Image (cartoon, rainbow, N blue to C red):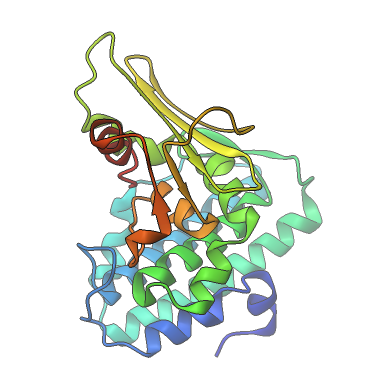
Length: 256
């Protein structure tokens, strides 16, 4: 049973829950290496870690973010234990974000995976995780497309997550000391998302449209591409950049 408070704090929680309940734990997903059960373990660990880090700030004793090995205890649970743990961790996160909203300035800076975020990030990031990983379960259904098209999803992916999304992909590029990859992901009527990688690292930013786009698509597809996903219908994105440029940009956009 999900409380009204958790539903209000994480509006995407119920659609995610329904998607999980409509599938077997061992069903495959669009996240190619994960089953439904793997997605649920990942989400339980996400909720736990977001709550743990924010609670530590409330307690005046900040902690560092743990790596993805935080998922291991959840993967060892039975299916019923995992389900209960996931719901409990989401409820706890909702409680802690409410306390932080009451006791901390929204501009309070918190360290999260090597970068600084603010208090609203914690609920918003879990919401994004619920939307993205629900898509991993359902693909391009109406609920997924509506959520992915929301402007805040693009802003959160670029501004609040940003460079970590490009780390894996940049490692797969043989750039050398002088090499550089840059791509413009365009959704008509919005700022471009500009991604880049060179010997000095990676970059991602929003910028006014300028020159030709590397890839043009709707907003939902653009979010999926940033997270290393592929829409079921490839005709939803378009490119005149040529195979070599497109290959390198798509490699950079490998996601986590």
